[in-house]
Image (cartoon, rainbow, N blue to C red; front, side, top):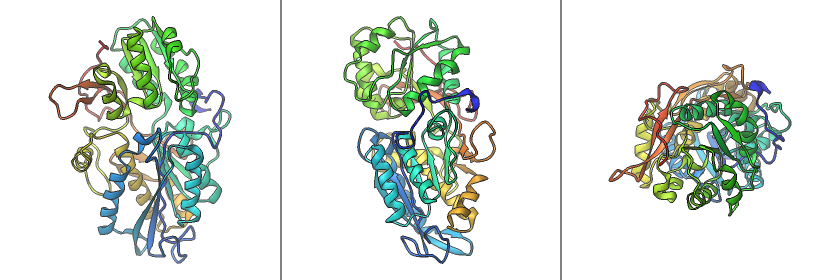
Length: 430
């Protein structure tokens, strides 16, 4: 595997991930202009596999907002395909945070709704089975919000041979660099406890992180991967005592359980960097004051200097619109859900056709500046050709007295994303 990264025991095609959204652009089926698809020959149907319910619902929290915004945008801005203008129909199906269901609804979008293209967002348990369906049916697929390794490496230690699936996100090598940047600013004893679940993300992170962070002088000890839904973390907490650093990638409800039990049992690391679970304001607020200065990766933030290629909105404007309409705090998947529509539109426009092979060819060399930054395939020889890497920063959740929100995610590490402004420096947990 490139970069010396493995998935541990490997990831099966059907069981890779945790949340997704598949979008079907039906204009003319996969046969291109002239062949009537789900919405007719003058309609581009977008099938969106979302996670509206289940344990991964936080990944899909902003999806309804994005769909509403995109429907309004496309109503006034048809997609240009060659010399034709196509209306856009968006069909949303809920994967219910279930791997098997994700594959099934993707199949329905293709076979019942006439999808020309499918997009999916979230962890590997969702995006991988969606991609698998697209590969089996020769339908273009665009996915995001899963590190590229568990998306690409589904069995053994080599990337899958994917023809119709294109993915944009960062990799484990990037998040390891960001985490080390945070650890280096907080005095610690070089010992880290690894909190890794028995799922594709946990297996990939647990297999790769010890080697990726070795140069930082921090040694990760993993007492064993635990099943999602664990209710008693006493064994892990006992093993972690004496470790100043905590690192892991649990699902949100499991980290809430773990961190509350850790405080009750006297485990107090100096720095805790947690992927997945700490992405969402709702998860942080559920912890209350004990969440102050917990750290995580930052894939997208309103302070980033990016703009939508469709609406022209800045990252800040998109976040503000979301908060005004929903009454909720902005969330990181918001930007990537929006970017999926940007990439899909750019690919179909570049192809000049809704033909599956034409869209796939367009994606292989596509470059588009989106609200999450530049997305470009075929530029990085260290990743599979169907992977486009996006930038990554690191942040800490800070409790704000009298602020707009109870907690704010402050960017404290930007070595891999220098265009994203720092909001502060890493601080130790109290």
